[in-house]
Image (tube, rainbow, N blue to C red; front, side):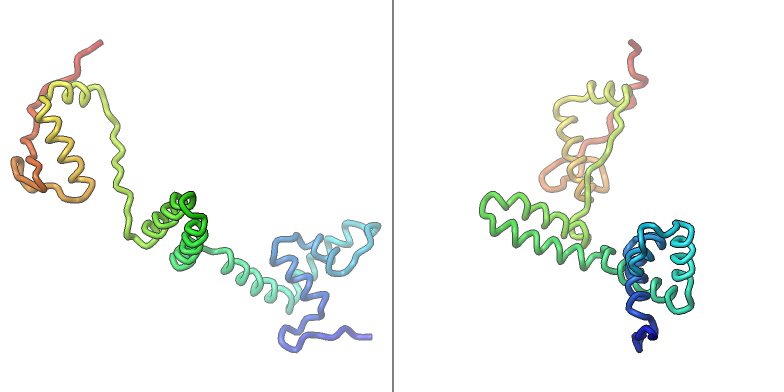
Length: 184
């Protein structure tokens, strides 16, 4: 009796099962064992050969590729999927009441980053002895102005000239060249 073939794929049910198992990550030998109900006593070399042959069959190989593409599409993440998932997390978190607010905020932060509405404005400074020495010699007023300028820089609002007032802060002139850090 001849096995019935699917009119669309041209594969028998066992061939289709084999293709699905391989597409979802099983190796060819294990997929062959499962799809064809192979006896545990069957020689491994036979199972390996049959699995390889099936995986390279003219109708099965393209079906495996098609199924792998579908699997990859389901597993891939894009902006739309990230936002949809984060929105679900927000709803679940908010249903948890006050305890869920932190999780909801985290989901909102993720949406903001994924969509580009929020950008990471942290600045990584590698502070050397020279910079530490230079900062130690500044007055309190100069330090406050430097901190204000750093805050504005993270917002992309640096003034064009020293002494310019931006949001109530005066940006100081550049500190004088203090020289090298003290040794020791």
